[in-house]
Image (tube, rainbow, N blue to C red; front, top):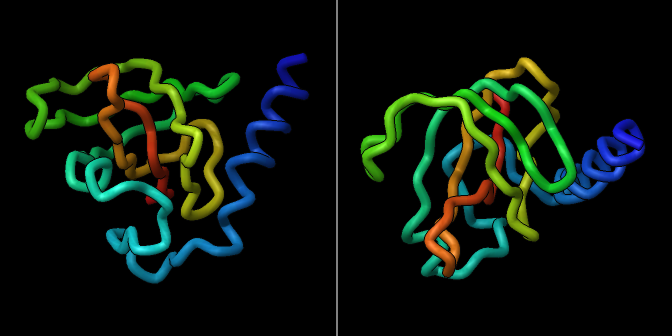
Length: 113
């Protein structure tokens, strides 16, 4: 079941790859997010520890913009999460975190380092 879940997640996350612009990691112009989401987005570098059903476990660097120290935690993937390249468990990635209406941060984009 875990293999099936990971396969489905990989397919869902890889679909935007054909449309993703990879030449500039900070260019979010192709992402389908509201201006409010983009305005409140924060970025961090992290190591990808595991991928689950709609969640990713990472060990991330400090995020001073929101007062978070470095830590290991689970993040939900937004429905519009963008993958800007292929990633595997153990990879270093840059995360774009979007603050939801519930006040929780979720992954809006993931870019391999």
